[in-house]
Length: 168
Image (cartoon, rainbow, N blue to C red; front, side, top):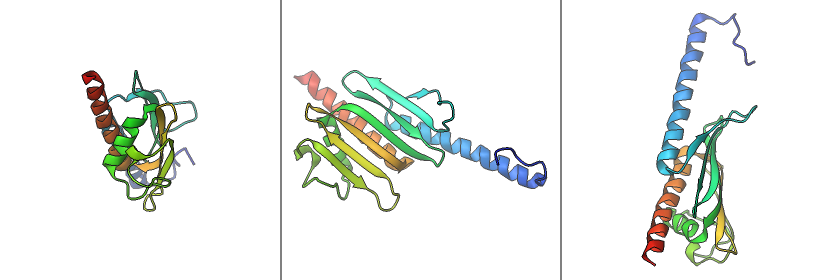
């Protein structure tokens, strides 16, 4: 039922239009929050047949990836080639209550994949420390505030990593 029925009452049509306007504002605000948390993101065109809002980044030494905001208002993140130190610093800063396969801080963990599944939101956070010094961050179906918190921590960890690299 994609076409609006002409048999709907004018007040119902007005209510639907109000809802649609609010939803579009909510999505725009979600994108603004994600871009503020991780300023390296830029807009990308939507794929044909895909309603997700798509943001991407590619930065030398910081990896590359994308963030999508789905039509349910949740964020999906896929970042690759991120320095392990950046991932570990960001995750340790966030202080997730439990990370599968980690016996302590991620900064002390060996290469591998570490997962947190949020029982409240059903979001999944997966952090992979690669064997060659670079890993991945994959977040699935996260509420925007949770995804923004991870992106913000990653941004600060990148800044600290870059500052440490320029001192050496």
